[in-house]
Image 1 (cartoon, rainbow, N blue to C red):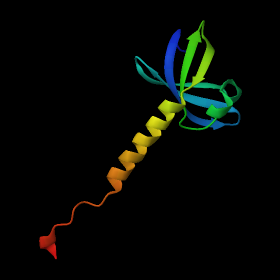
Image 2 (image 1 turned 30 degrees about the vertical axis):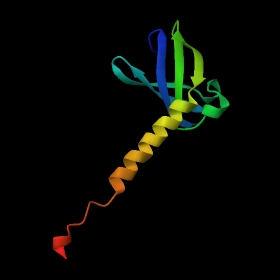
Image 3 (image 1 turned 90 degrees about the vertical axis):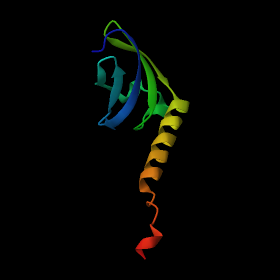
Image 4 (image 1 turned 120 degrees about the vertical axis):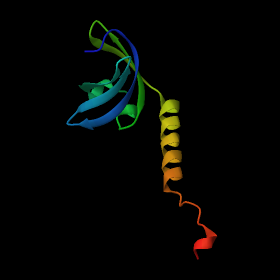
Length: 94
């Protein structure tokens, strides 16, 4: 389990009632499996950003961060759009 503290986490997936969270720790990313029912209803989908609090080796609070979720989704879309643009065509090649 994670040490006591507050962390940013992202829902990686939910399968068979288990939510796998990618938790940003000082040592990098860590995975945490919890019952999907411990998540707020609106946060039970992949790529949702959460703020979680752990105390005494237990998950004690989960807060859905809709603005951060939207920001990350927008940034991902901008990156995809930039990568999918065609490079400028050199007019001398025609």
